[in-house]
Structure formats: C-alpha cells, structure tokens
Length: 381
Image (cartoon, rainbow, N blue to C red):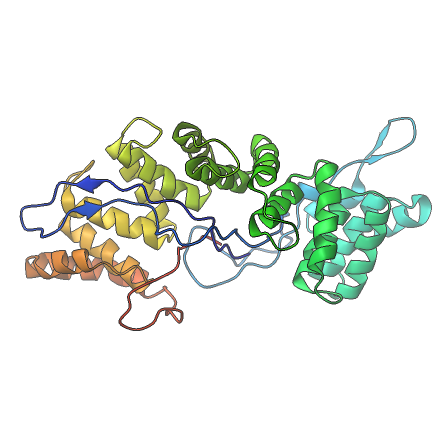
C-alpha cells in the first residue's frame, strides 16, 4: 500500500561550503507541513512459496506491482479442546501455494468444527483470488463469520476490506471498531493502524497520547512501521515527552529492519548528531542504502554529501548521478544544479551517463507543477 507519511520537524545542520559554493549545504529531514498520518495499510506478511517461478524481482525500482501476498501472518494451529494442537494442514498448504488443497482443508474444518481460523483462511483465498475466483462479497462473508467468533485476524482483514470499500460500501467507522477489537486481542497491525486513526482525528478525536500507547505496543512487538511512527512522536514531543535519544534509537531499530523512511531519517540523525553520536561516515552508508532503494530524499542528500566530501571522499561524478536521479523523481535542488553546471564537462558527462540506467526506469512525475520544483516525501511501497 502507499504511504503518505508521518512528517518530521526540521533538524538542520549547515555543512561548510566548498570553495565554489555560494550557499551552505543543508542535510535536513523533508520539509514538515502538517502531522498527516500514513494511510491504513495491511499487515506485512512473508509471501508463500510459489508453485511457479516468480516473475517479480526484488530490489528493483521498476513500476511492476507484485500480486497480493498471503503468508504465515495469519497461520495459527487449530487448538482442539484439551489444549492439543492439530497439524495445520490448511495453512501449510496455503503457505506452500497449494491453494486448492488449502481451500478443501479449510472447508472441511469449517464443516466439521466451525473453525474460525479456517473461516479467515477462506476469506483470504476469496479476497485474493487464490485457487478460487476473486469474490469480495464472499471474502467479507467469511471474514465476518470469523470475526463474530472472535478471530482477531478475521477482524483485521474485514476492517481492511471495509476501509477499501470492497465487498460493500466503504465503512471507516465499522473498520475502526473492528481494529479496536482486534487490537485488544493483541493484533499488532491492528494496533498500528488504530494508532494512525487517532493521529488522523476523524473516526476518533485526535489523541497523540493514545496513539503513542498503541504504537509503543506494536513497536515493542517488532513492527518497523510502528517503530518509525513512534520515533516521529518522540522527535516532535507529541503524546510523549520530547526525547531525541529515544527517537534516534527507534529510528535505528526500524532502519535495520528495512523501513526506508527510517533509514533516511536515521542517516540524518547520524549526520547531525541528533540524539545519537555524530557519525558522518555511518550516515553516508545509510543514505547510500536508501538511495539505491529509490528514495529521492536519500538520493538528494547523498548527492550533497558527495559534492562536499563529508564523511566520504568528494565524488563529483557520483554527486551528479544522484542529483539527476533525485531531480527526475521530483526532488529539485538549485544548489546542486549550480554545482553540476560548474563541473568540468567530462565529469558532468560521466555523471549523466551513470544516471541514465536509473532514469530509464523512473516513471514520469504527474504531481509536480512545472517550474515549481516541489515534491511530496518519497515513500517505499
């Protein structure tokens, strides 16, 4: 799903300008506007083993969108009376991509035992069209039966469909109530999404304290998105006492777990020494990692650092490359425009050549007004 971003306050730090520069270089977070929460998104689940070679390739920036992925996030063994666990053949088949087998086994469990987990699995199969034709109405029906029987996964998945308006009218109030129920039962993704609703302030009165409480539980359980979101609250002092050290700690944890936004902001914290020991070389490594994953913000900051030679040797060719890539994605920078213009022609041409493979796969921007040079924060999908 798309992320639209919890924003950060500006934490600026001027770098000493190069001899030719007319203005200081700034390594700052993306410009803050309003505390807009990320949109509701489903839980992150590992994909099942495919029955055929997968066509999607990870680690690329191409516009291809992978198919929805089921996974082990909803798989729990069926508990029979007395506490013994029955081998979960339905979910084992599901995780292996054997959807017809999963459908048959789940149907058996529903018919013989009225098993709520099996109902959730049937909802998942219909919602994604795995092994059966996609049917949102049937998915809603199965998730509803599972939710009525107390299954927290069924509640969460039904909330996601209600929010998306699939299988019936869009129902944010109903979805919020389902998320409340699932969160009380310990569903981590539900707690995270519920926190976003408290930040948004539509279904509930805006309550940063309650949002922080929910995010803390999800963050402690290892949810990188919750760790990043909670870090922004500590950075801004919303719902919690302002604490740059705790913000940096959470950003580091989320960054190491692969949250792209956290990678960028942790790099900024390291470069500026905000809440963590200053480490320009470490910041460069994080900026480079995020830049290679397609973050225009990281690409822009990396280009500035390479131009100035802070934390890494100056490299005008690489600086030109990353500036052109970031600019193509909407992250304009007049300072770097001037830097590139004043380069030796050979360096400028080498940078342009290095950028070409990336520019060939960056989709054209449609949300930037020509001549304004402004862009929203870049987000990983």
